[in-house]
Amino acid sequence: MDNLLYWVGLAAVAVNALTGVLDAGRKKMDLVGVTMVGCATALGGGTVRDLLLDRPVFWIGDQTYLVVALATTLAVFFAVRGLRLPPHLFLIPDAVGLALFTIVGTQVALEWQAPWLVASLLGVITGVVGGVLRDVLCNEVPLVFVRGELYASAAWFGALVLVGLQALGLSPVAAAWIGMAAVLAARLLAMAYRITLPTYSERE
Amino acid sequence: MDNLLYWVGLAAVAVNALTGVLDAGRKKMDLVGVTMVGCATALGGGTVRDLLLDRPVFWIGDQTYLVVALATTLAVFFAVRGLRLPPHLFLIPDAVGLALFTIVGTQVALEWQAPWLVASLLGVITGVVGGVLRDVLCNEVPLVFVRGELYASAAWFGALVLVGLQALGLSPVAAAWIGMAAVLAARLLAMAYRITLPTYSERE
Amino acid sequence: MDNLLYWVGLAAVAVNALTGVLDAGRKKMDLVGVTMVGCATALGGGTVRDLLLDRPVFWIGDQTYLVVALATTLAVFFAVRGLRLPPHLFLIPDAVGLALFTIVGTQVALEWQAPWLVASLLGVITGVVGGVLRDVLCNEVPLVFVRGELYASAAWFGALVLVGLQALGLSPVAAAWIGMAAVLAARLLAMAYRITLPTYSERE
Image (cartoon, rainbow over all chains, first blue to last red; front, side):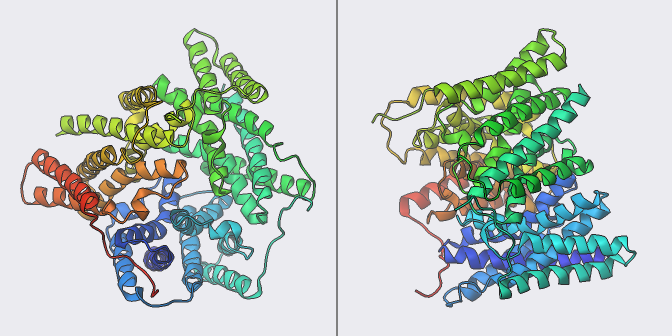
């Protein structure tokens, strides 16, 4: 399981760095601005999780995460510069990053002895904070707050699937894969069919 | 005293969650967006205090706080939806939350051996950070920064009252109640009579 | 070296508080708003560094930093109020604060056994986060993200100079002075000659 978490964590870092670059690029930031947004998107969620759990921050001790985030950022920057990309292209990798980070975050919190409800919320935080930082730094209202389609709720659903399957006795590795599939499926279906939650609104 | 801090802390969480929902609702967020803003408003200030003091974060180990925040958020969401509320209604619970959190934050910092000036500032941080998060997430300029009326200054005044009364030998519990009353009175009087501090301005 | 770090740290706190006041003043904030922006600008970068490294936060245990930040804020507030200042005056102390904090941050991280690449990035974070907080609280897009001229890149360049010179066997104190000069020179030259990095942009 630790091995799986490590590789899924690296993949999540790379995918989130990619979405950060695509978003920052639309704002015409320069190379360093793009790099910082890419790294913040890639490392932000796990950092907040580790601070809240009072664990050592994952990318401080092991330089690999930072190298992956920087390498992805630079590669995407030079690969995509000058191409005309559809503006919403980054929604797909964003959904993948959400799924990977949510499950890694929930699992790490469970292994750190957090109560299950807290662990599922820490999973959601790990999943969405990177994207929130990206959007705040690019001066946009975060996707997670304004989109009608399921976003944090998709993450929470998958985190609860992970917690529930483990409570039922499934192996952590199997539960993790199913949880990731649950987040991704919920988010993609919600985007495809415009599934939304009830909106709060005062009488209009 | 610890008992008082625990219950005042829970009350502060509930009151701040309420203000988060009322504010998020005006932005027509959906159920999960509202829930996240409610929880961030309720838990944000104490979280920052605990991170700065290097204490375990208060809602990670004890699931009660999170349950209270979630339950308040859901209850207010469904109770208030569809009502037409006066737009500034949330200023009163906001003042109550400010008073409760400021005093809890200052007292926790004092018990954690922070120097008195640092402790009073940590009280202000505990009091205002939840509201700042709420306003930033709702994409508004934070109340604490633009309002002419006393806000952070009301919190700081009450925190210093708490510190001063304890230094004079008053029991911590009595000092806490008087400090809360001081914050609340200062904030409400400032709103009622539009009491303001000198404004910085270059010659106009 | 520890002695040098201490005094450079205090100087950096004072300089950054100054820039916070100048910026907050243009927004016509009141005394407490200005104080909070000044303190956040002065203490924010080092706080994030200490949280990421899991060190005790530098201004919690030693009240001196907070006193310096508050005293600078108040002194500047009353000294500058009513003067008509050129709007970009604060760019010079901002560059000085960037240089001081970047080098202190990198050196502290190295002494805390962070790997060199992580240490240089923590130096950049220490240098830029105070200014980012200032700009976010004043509701502006952070300097570091939109300016064409070198900013974070100047900080990173100096941090790498510091790391490199120490690896070559230079004494930490000498390396620190040269690193500070490198950040300052890079930033000031970039402003004077409008040196920029390549910008990401999709075909236009």
